[in-house]
Amino acid sequence: MKRLTVPKILEKHSRGEKIAMLTAYDSTFARLVDEAGVDMILVGDSLGMVVQGHDTTIPVELEDVIYHTSCVARGSRSALVVADLPFMSYQCSRSQALLASGLALKEGMAGAVKLEGGLEMAETTSLIVAAGIPVMAHIGLKPQSYHTMGGYRIQGKSRDEANRLLSEARAFEEAGAFALVLEGVAMETAADITRAVSIPTIGISSGPHCSGQVLVVYDMLGMNPGFKPSFLKTYADGHKLITSAVEKYVDEVRRGIFPSEAHGFHRK
Image (cartoon, rainbow, N blue to C red; front, side, top):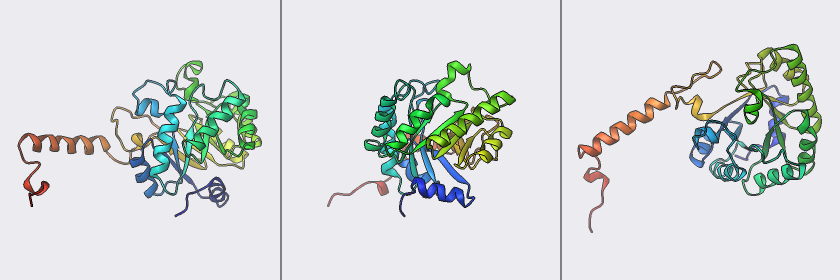
């Protein structure tokens, strides 16, 4: 099966098909979610929290994203791979943003990049798109602006905030972004934005009215039982499944059950 491209994603959207996106950070998980049929794989800067163990996404470096994106690209076959540009890899200048985006495709083998921002990032997006690099924009709750926002707070609850987000969405659409991530947006505002733009909106904690959805793969698999935000639906008890399997392995090793002769090799 050929890998999905941006035009194919837009064709799905034009037919009214919902778009399914998940994160992945390594070849094995990329292969699994790809085989399960996701349309897009996001190599999110969320890797800073779920892979590297940081409290926020801010410490993630461009080199980290490029490395993990290349792993995902090698492990997947059909999904569009999107590299998430990390904090301070694109905000300093448009030339820096263009270079970071180019490296994500050239070395990371991504099919598109994602960047966070508002109206100030519209011209940067236009420049990147003009260079032949597809851009997915990210508005609403922006994790890279954690300190400015004062934490993770739902956006678009007031009329003024809703109007600002709508202006940002339209600006990114005009700049050539092929899709919009709406994170932590009040669902009525997310619905208004989805109706107002022609490009797909990909929601996370923004309700059911977006064109598609994205979740962190470890979250939807229930790897961290202590993380239970209201927007999250877990589709497996990954924590119990894995810890139970490891406990059984540890027990069998200690009791001398594993390995047995069936797991070894004989001399000729």
